Image (tube, rainbow, N blue to C red; front, side):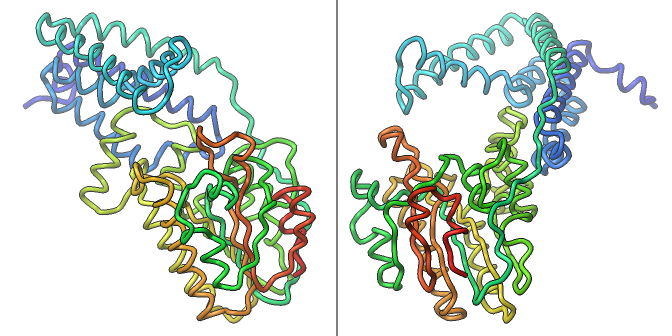
Amino acid sequence: MKTTANYFWSFSKINLLIFVTNFIYIASALLGIYKDNAEFFVENAFQAVDIIFYCFVLLSFLFIKNEKLYFLISLFLILDLPVNLKLSLQGLLIKYLNFPGGPANQFVTYALLFCIFGLVVFLVVKFNSVRYFQIYLLIFYSISLINIAFRSKKVNNPSLRLGNQVSSISKNYYFFLFDEYPNEQVIRKYNLCEPTSYPSVLLGRESFINDQNVYSNFISTEKSTLTFLTGSFQADYNVNKTIHAIYNNAFAKGTNYSFYTYSLFDNEHRPNSEFSVFYFKDFNNLSTRKLIPSAIKLFTGKGLGRATDWEVYNAGTIGKLAALSSLKRRHVVYMHFFTPHIYPLVWGQPMSERIKNANQWMLKAIKLLDENDPKAGVVIFSDHGLREPYIRNKLWNKNLLYFRNIKIDTTLVNKNGLVDLIKSINY
């Protein structure tokens, strides 16, 4: 009967070398995650996808005895070299060969990757060159670990500067943010959708007033959300501040009302979602980016990590709104719809379809308020405009603003931007 020690030494030296390399890679990635954002290290390093990944690394070592197969699985599914090489090739094509981004760039990049890794597979299978490749990878990731170890820890100061705080309200208020929804002037200028889908057409029927001169102070979601919720510019910006602003903001300390939120930044929806890909440093390999999230969604029907199902998330906002709009106590509700932003369900769809997708959630929310809280003040806005290469950069912060049953000093908002939206309202 084999002892644990005997079982361990039964593995080939090459397999042990591969496992050590994988361990060093994981250690360097975790150290990088910690140094990038220590406050959310535990959440980011132990997501469901990452835990499955750790198990996959261990099980592949324990049960795959064939050196060539184990090496190829390690190279393509565990290490981040393929993904990083792809990103580097894309950048080189744009920078040095003036090769534009888009499908053509993707095609050439994948063709080059196929040639490079096809040659690696050929050499491994035909000439048994695993040992040489693996020694190189061990040195490469050891140097990477040393570099990260000497890197300074990033400081993410979470303290917030709050502007005008709303202490009391005369009725209920609802703020619905639709991520990246463009201003109607931009929609018309670039013919982004049919006239029947214009927000002025849909919301005009629901007695909403619009302001076409509003703009966001930033073109990034975390900065715009942060300035809107706090009603103030910050000394410095980081995603930690935005997360904390969900719970500590201009509405959080109301004396005669309660504040409720539903956001991709909140403690319920942020973990185990695509959020970490957007805002945190994370593992950057094919297993955590593609294989594991896709497998989870296939077998459970629930999207996690890069396979987050934002339609499920958006449907959750409607379910939450149904409950909140029926409350008797006065309240302010802030909800972040992640649309018409690109996400897995609508990849490849034109902007016209994405706007229709956003509009359907918009109308569902309004219908609920018509039934449960028709006299409430409602603000429908976006954090920034549409950031596409074919749209002039200076229009990227032209966002959406519609409201009803509410008085807004639009002159103030047009002058100072989204940061003064809360301040401009007569509660």
